Length: 194
View (cartoon, helix red, strand yellow):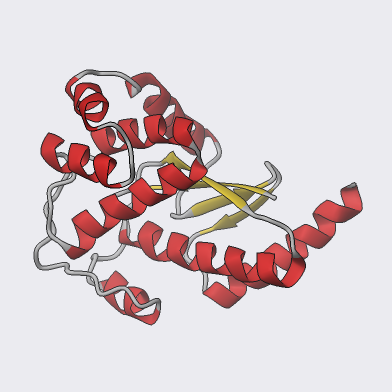
């Protein structure tokens, strides 16, 4: 099954929700044998309660958010890099997204900083010089803007916003068990459509 997730690099709910979704997808694949391919698109985070409220939810998922050292950042350059990374495959994009979340939420790094972006891209196997050149340019700005416009046109208001097979939607943070159950239900309906 193909899953598209609208999320944001600076949104703690996206980080927690995607982590839960990925674990649920792995569990689902083990149980059913059906692979779940996950790709990510940019969305603008909605107004939510204070980031500190996400700390407890994150802790349940084994993530210790460091909200004291958070560096406010415009995630546009990160998303330009993530959009480029997707060309190397969903796995590369996923790995880079998690590197950026770790940098932002666990290490207090500035994910708008070109050095941070380039080094994180290199950590997941992308070419450092190409990443640096991309960040220094305005490449991929139009696709990122289009991703955000698409999210807006779909009425995305809670992140993460999960779209399965362009038909089923799971909006907002769910528990890992809820994601597993939803994937089972969607798979049954999807299989019946043939």
